[in-house]
Amino acid sequence: MTTPAILVEDVTVHYGEVLALDSASLSLDAARICGLIGMNGSGKSTLFKVIMGMVRPDAGRVLIGGQSPSKARKEGGVGYVPQSEDVDWQFPLSVRDLVMMGRYGHQGFTRRPSKADRAAVDEALDRVELGEYASRQIGQLSGGQKKRAFVARGIAQGATMMLLDEPFAGVDKRSEATISRLLRELASDGCTILISTHDLHAMPALCDEAVLLMRRVLMHGAPEQVLQPENLAMAFGLDVLNRPLPGEGSPGSGHAGGHKHHAARAETAPADAARAETARARNGG
Amino acid sequence: MDLLDLLLEPLSYDFMVRAIVTTALAAVVCAVLSCWLVLIGWSLMGDAVSHAVLPGVVLAYIVGAPFALGALVFALIAVTLIGVVRNTSRVKEDAAIGIVFTSLFALGLVLISVTPSQTDLNHIIFGNLLGVSVPDLIQVLVLGVVAFAILILKRRDLTLYAFDPTHAHAIGLSPKRLGALLLGLLALTSVVALQTVGVVLVVAMLIIPGATAYLLTDRFSRMLVIAPVISGVCSIAGIYVSYYLDTASGAMVVLTQGVVFAAVYLFSPRQGLIGTRLAKARRRKAAALAV
Image 1: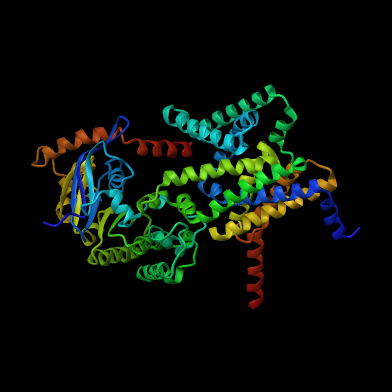
Image 2 (image 1 turned 30 degrees about the vertical axis):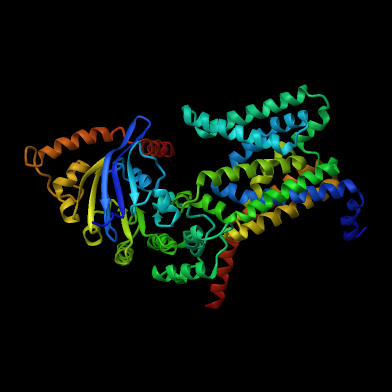
């Protein structure tokens, strides 16, 4: 048996009193694209943070390619594409500067770019078809181009595993197709890709497998199977694709009972979600 | 009297030469650091640390230790206290910063009031540009060069930290350590600037140049050139103006920087309030002529 590219074993994370991940387990083989779905507060970002080693789990362990996350990070294997709202798009940085940041792990004390670094950056830019935009300030790209610029950073880095947080938010259909194609190419080159997304429509075409998360992994399988209405109802409390819900008392009711339990806990969402909520409220008032 | 005489006359006084060298140096180092502070959103932190070092400097004076050491210790104490108050109570960060730095600043004032030889220490609060001694100059020179060198050598890491600490973490760097480095440099730079404009106005030199440069360019590497150049020129211009108008020198330096910021804010071709409109009008005119 081969070593899984990402292995999450019985990981539990608390933020203070709030339970963000409850003994979550996930094993992902190399060169696969996996879509991670779950409602806000289901622990998607926490799972990302645990895999990246930014949050230390209270219990359980994470292995990346059979190694500890910190070793994997040092070797440059972990690429990350942030959510658009987490990026300061006004930052005085060109697309080329951004992609060059992928090379920092390979560079010396002052991160002075070598010829090889420049070549890697050019290659990554061509790969995502942003060569002609290389000297633009990052905020002057379209939504889809912005995502591709960050993917290029991961490519220049030589990441063997890429985590993408909501890559399709604020991206039009055409760019979505371009990004999907790009990710498929990367996967066929051996890169393991984990995508957290609300865009369930794009999923079957893009992902090899899907994971349904609600503090723990409720389901892990083929996208078509995971996206069945009764399964989505289990994680979201409703079918997000607007298909008729299975009635109460149907074979899915066992799950439905489970979902009520989880939904009730979702009201006391993890700390960061709650804080974002108060920030929104403050801006509104 | 022609222009050359106007420029040379102040230089015939040694104290003016020392004032100009010290100020220009402090202005340049502060300006380089300010580029990161304004982008991370640490302006308030700059304000806090530059005030909070006061008791450290006074204590260092009392025991005869280097000012920089006392300043570093108290910068660290300030940052730790801010973190503790923010994380362990319902008080939000801005309030935590406000409470900690004003309290430490007040502690510094109290220490000054009970320490003999008050004149010397009052200069720390408002700066004493014209009274810079040779040892002062050497201290500023050494600290300034050290801070400048570290900032420039580590500029790419610091920029990465400012832009995307998550990526820094993902490639095996420590965002925590980079943040601490930047805070340490902030404390060091505060000491450099204390001498010239004083605790109260240091924060101006730590924010205005970076903010001005940010309105002028879309490239961080250019900000790192524009900010120190503007800041250096402003500081020297400010000293000359204060010499001929007989005004407070440190304050004049900051005022000059403020005026230049206002001009850039209004007339910057990229971001300026009036500049962008003028550019638009010119384009319209050109288009009309082309028809």
